[in-house]
Length: 111
Image 1 (spheres, rainbow, N blue to C red):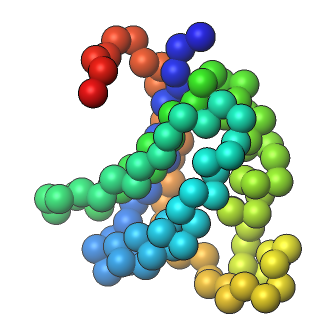
Image 2 (image 1 turned 180 degrees about the horizontal axis):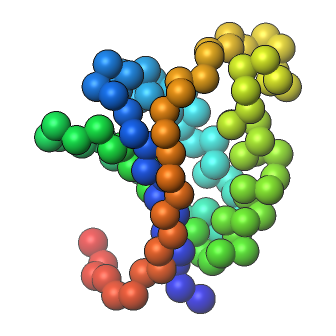
Image 3 (image 1 turned 60 degrees about the vertical axis):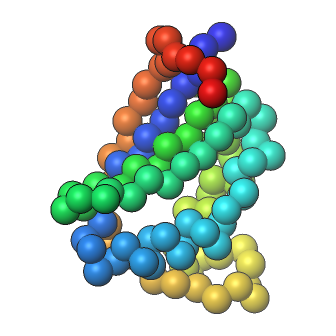
């Protein structure tokens, strides 16, 4: 099988950047135990662009699909008023645009 890359391209106005980074940091490692999960990066632009990239790597498409349709994904993407954890502080939706991109690794090199 070949690694599948899923990129969630987020349009983040500069004033929301710190909040986006904070929210992702609060959930760091939440997907680590998912079957077929290989890695995650939140990538912020270092120029004047407003597109942040949430890059995940998966063993295969089926692994990503299983995670996306499971409770872990739902909990991490639940609206603030519908959380299953009543004790956690809820933050309102940020109202940013997102687009999911999908890629497969053709070639690469080892670190």
